[in-house]
Image (cartoon, rainbow, N blue to C red):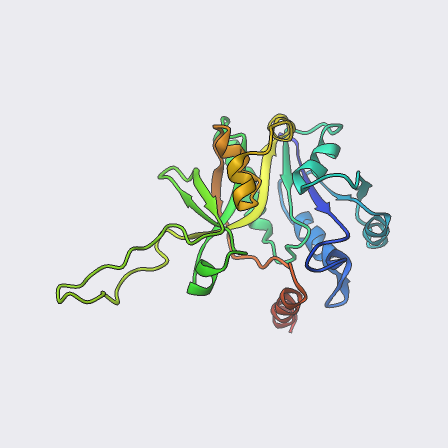
Length: 255
């Protein structure tokens, strides 16, 4: 199979404008993402799909490959679909441009799912939630899965909802395993090329509009999403505070 990774890149992000070209330990943020993707074994090529020449120039300056796309796209999947339509590829991997800590092994595991099951049309990365803060944070998307690791539902709300368990003495048991079965969604997807193009022709769904999560369009239309456990958690950069957090993690690794 021919597999291509595409990084959708929008310059004017709502909460942190021009974050993708912000300095992160001496490199633009998007360069960290690009270089992590290039470390994978299964990606035949990596392309940045940008909506602004400013991003194109930054990517080309560090030796990356970038293509200018329409500014009218409402989502990253629409942006990568514009490029994917003209590519010879079997699998397209949508790698978020604000995930500088994405593990290359996680990307390889995601792609491997398609080799193991020829019926898979779309797959995504998840990671077990480790703390109460993430469970309660609406910016951390949660997902519940079935016994075969297919997604049942994604939400910004706390799912599954762990009901308080009463102890034999009538009080609330302190031994409730709060995080058992709770998974964080890491917004990296892999699609068959045909399904990616089909997905972007589907109408926006009610659940998608309610949760502001485009993957719910897939579930609401009766398709399944395979989930793959990431090798490690990842920190998306949505704000300047997130950037400082990632910078601290990278400095510890460098030193």
